[in-house]
Every structure is written in C-alpha cells, then in structure tokens.
Length: 247
Length: 247
DNA sequence: CGGCCGGTTGATAACGCTCAAATGCGGTGG
DNA sequence: CCACCGCATTTGAGCGTTATCAACCGGCCG
Image (cartoon, rainbow over all chains, first blue to last red; front, side, top):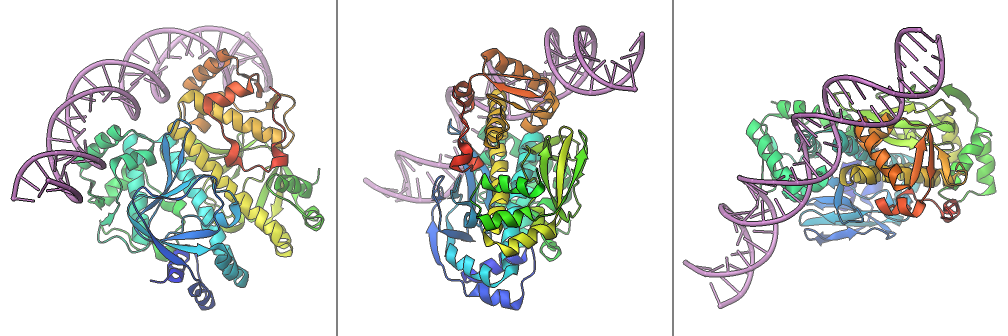
C-alpha cells in the first residue's frame, strides 16, 4: 500500500474525505524504512522535519524520569500517524521508538503542508487527529492514576482490541500485540513482576489469552466490564466502530 | 482587560504575533461570566460552540472512572485558554470546572475561526497551543505513573509556580493556588489523607509553604531537585521563562 | 450556637515493589 | 545435532508505600 493510502485510511477513521482530498493525499511522496525492536525513531530535543506513518509493526511513544524510569505514553498500530503534532510543535519532547520490528513511512512536513494548503478539510482532520492524541493521553492518565492493576491491564487490552478492529487488523477475536510483559509494565506504571502476576490472574478469569505477542479475547463483555471500558475517548466514527465482537 | 488582550497574552507565551495579528485578536467579541467553586463549565458529551479563557481564578479539567473516582487532567490559571481543542474536536470528552470562584470569558467558535481565516500565523499558534496541552497531559501521566508521592507533589508545585511566573501572577516567590488537599489528591492520584502527610513532610524540608490557597516557595532549587523538574514540556518561549526565582 | 468543611492524626490493611532465583524457549555457533 | 547463551516469563519471600477507616480539631458561616 502506498503511503498516501495509509494516511487516507487513517483519516477516514475520524472523519470524511472528498474524492479530491483522496487524490491529494495519494499524491504524497515519502520513503519507507525498517526499524528494529527497541530502536528510537525520534528522540527528545530534536526538531523533526517529517512525520511518520506506521506501515507494519508496533511503535511506542515514551518518556523518562530523571531516575531512568520509563513511561509509555501511547502505542501505534499500523495505519497510525504517531507524530503529526511535529508539524506545529517545534521541539519534540519525548521519544518515539519501535516496540517490535516495524516498517514506517517517512513524509516530509512540506508534503503535508502542501495538501493542507490545498484542502482545508484535510487540515481540519489532521488537526483533529492531533487533538485525539491528547484525549488518549488523558485517558491513560486517568487509568494509571485511578485504576488498580487488573483494571489498567484490561483497559489497555480493550483499547488495543478496539483500535485493531477499527483498522481491520483483528482476525476474529485476536490481534497482534508484540509487547513483552516489561513493555506492558512501562505502559501501565507497574513493575514487570506485578504485570506477570496480574496477567496470570486475568488469564485465570478466562477473559483473554496473551502470549507470544498475540492478544486473544475470549470474553469481550467480561473484559469490558472489569474495567468499565468506554471507547468515547478514541473518537472513532460509527463506520470505524463496526467491528464489534459478536460475544 | 478585554478578552482579546487575554488571548494575545496567552499566545505570546508560545510564539510571536504581528501587530496585524494583535489588532485582529483585539477585535474578538465575547462575554464574561462568573463561576463558583465546584461548578461545571463544560460536561462530558456536549458539543461546545465556544471557547473559554480564564480571566481570574482557577479552573480544572477532570475525568471520572465508572466508580466515581475523579482524576484531574490539568489546572488553568488566568490567561489560559482551557478548551481551544473544541474548535475541532466535536464531542467534549471530559469535564471543565472551577476549582475556585472564577471569572471566565466566553468566545464563540466563529469569532476564532474568523481571525484564524484572516491570519495563518494565529491559526498555527492556536494549533500549537492545543498540542502543548497534549504534552502537558503526557507529563502528568509520567509523573503520576512513575514518581513517589512527594516528587509528584513537588512537580505539580513547580509547574504551577513556573506557569504563574510566566504570566506575571507570582509575587516574589509565592502565587495563588486555591486548591484544597483533596483537589491536590485528585491531581496527583493520591488519597486526601496521604496528601496531607506528604504535604507535612515537604513542609518539614523547608522547601515551601502551602496554606489558605497560597503557595510559597522557600527553596526553589531544592524543590526542583526533589522532582528533577524540567520545564521543557511547558514549551514556554525564552521571554516567558524570564521570571526565574533569584534563590 | 451548631453545622459543615477542610485539615490533622492514628491504626490497620492492602496493593504493588524489590530482590533473588529458577524455568522455559528461541537463536547461534561449534 | 547439541551446547550454550540471552531474553522473557514465572515464582517466592519480605518490605514499603499508600489506601482505608475512624476520630478529632479548628475555623467559618448561617
């Protein structure tokens, strides 16, 4: 799939594009690149002149405390555009890295500005997309500050499953989630040991499986209820929310 | 001060305005209103057609878990514009409320769109401002997920002091912060009891005073060091960062 | 004067962390 | 093909931070 098509698919998750918009987006030129697990793509302090789209794999955004503790801020599935905010932010103030071997597309800012200048609708959608990232950070803040370990974990799994379904990456009731238990801990603000224990507790409930980088939801309703998951913060449009589980 | 002037002051914290931009912003019309402590200004699910500026007092943005636990996402000092993202977000997905009796300005979206249509520079600055809010949420996520209670508290106090200085609201080494200990707990993800104990511990270090809604920093360097505070995430421009403490 | 709210204090328990070690598994080199 | 290594996962024990429950104090307002 071409880079422009990925952007089209991404923006259609949150709004409507005209045929003219789609032609504009298809005209976008960029390169693609492979990144290995653990590799940093953007680092704190730099001033990127390009944006990224995820073609395959899994990326994360994270920050570090002065003591070296790592906190994940978001995960990015294929079709996501992790750093659109660099278009107007200047200094990038955290890190973007690969959680698993991934393929990314690299698009110069000027290409994006070109299509935004030509289509106010595309500008509005890209702006909206950057705002939804903030919404997501707030939900993670709520989750990590106010929920116990098992609910945090269920919440993250609900989010990933919902987003994977929205872009057609879930086959049946399972999707790829190539994260280690330590990675989970960095997302949820838990120690690796406690992640392991919590995971085994959740497995014992029979709500899900999680092994070798794959998440399988066995009881979607039960999982949603343990964490009272409300997907409003993802702001998916009705068509994108179609892929509900049948359970 | 007129509402447009407040917006000018706010945007100049993060970038430059031309004289023409300032005239445009001064032409903005809006109303002002009083809100009492605890009063909600925007609620989850609504679709606002106006934005807010803080003229006086203190606002908060917060979210609720299904169990009713409250998590604060941000505090807004005078001159802040708490919900500029509603220009492009559609549904508002959390709550905006007053932490203390406050004066707010209410500006119709169409007024903002008018000046943004006339000045791409203003559009870029407003967009940038909405992005900085996301940056702030991520810092709060890092703080609440990875720092112990005393460092969380020191971090919040450092942020408030830095922002108050940037808008000239700090007199010497103290500034107004009309929050209760329970409010602090909702920001930091701590129980009110533990907030009280932590506060007394910090007071015992001699770094600061906090009583009757006023924060006084006695040892800025010490406070910054306990939490390794790095203000990059606030993205204040060099002039706005001028008000460093002399200590 | 009484009530309410915010702050303070004490006792106890729960949740999650740290340290440490063992297990399992996939990949690599001999 | 096997031995080995590194990495991820699992398990155990003990500890520390923070939550909960409960009571009490003090100031402000009606």
